[in-house]
Image (cartoon, rainbow, N blue to C red; front, side, top):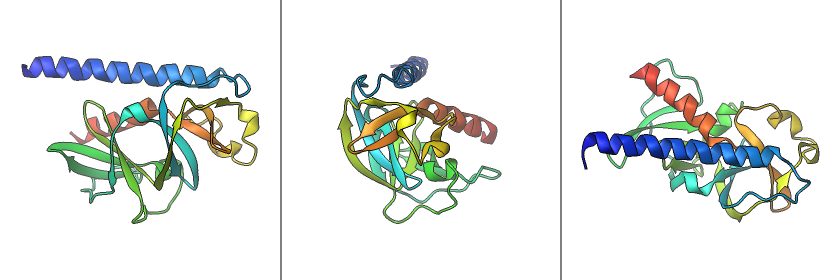
Length: 185
């Protein structure tokens, strides 16, 4: 396969990933009082002291956090670059992106996204795998509502076991990573 064919396939994969994220966001915004369900598997991760759902189809691998080379002038949530299976990648600390000032702990994990160019999302921990979570209404998220309401990184809310968890809009995180990458190249 030629390099141009490979690039075209990677672009198409990126478009499909973005479309999947938009479809999940549309379903999540539709509400339905817990009756509407998102199809598929989702990782339940701990971010900024609480649960968050990440589409499992977007995750290639879960690994320990690796040492990153800092990027000059990068925001605090961008931990830096690292080599993932021979390809340059960037690591984003989701807790910092959402406003936490804490450094990742030694128990933190990195979700390496299955995108055309690898991106690692650092989370506090991966707690479980959820199948077809029920969509929740914003009114069900009492005390935490202020943290997530209006965030461009959240495409909706779902039930994750006994709690309500925001659904990460992975495409928004990737847009930010691409912009940072482009300015650093």
